[in-house]
Image 1 (tube, helix red, strand yellow):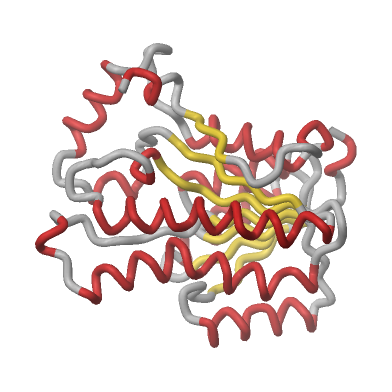
Image 2: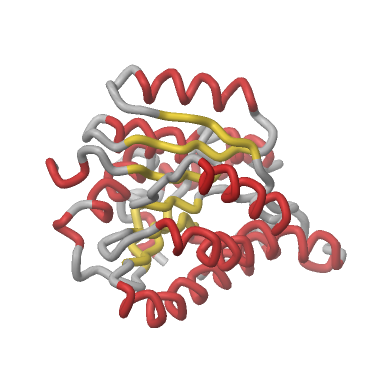
Length: 250
């Protein structure tokens, strides 16, 4: 994919898991990266090293994307660097895992702000750095359309995220900027370790996946690579599911 060489990707939550895998996969095709993180500095540094080993440029920059002031400061730095951004991967996510009736307003707002509203703020900030042909990719999950144990706040925020992508697609299309969502199946990342029933979730998902294995960060990264390429120029405002067929069994 020669068209990707020399381009720059901005990846939120890029220090670990899916974000890291996407940065490395894009780097293999000549894409430089800006890795955004908020807490895991060492992980971010390790990701920068792994990306640079592919022969491209990479930097890590700390900012809380749910905080508009922090977000603005970060893009002020990028503006001073005269950065151009070709691909955006909105991967950072968080949320409280509790039954719906135990959720507080703070729990709800936390998930919505980080998982949904942050995309709107991020898009507003990044558009001046993008040219026609740019791509924005968000990461969602099957919890946006299915009821999962203790996933109420996160699932609702992911549903809001997917809806926001559709509305943004209408406004970004005339600018020549594509936006899509990747909905990942169960991926065994650090985030999943926070689930009380992690082992049961993994086994249940494995048993119901026709392809016989769980989705990996690299599987998601492959689809992100495709969406950034010229092969995806007419895919816009869509949700692409990567789950080995898990969702088809109801």
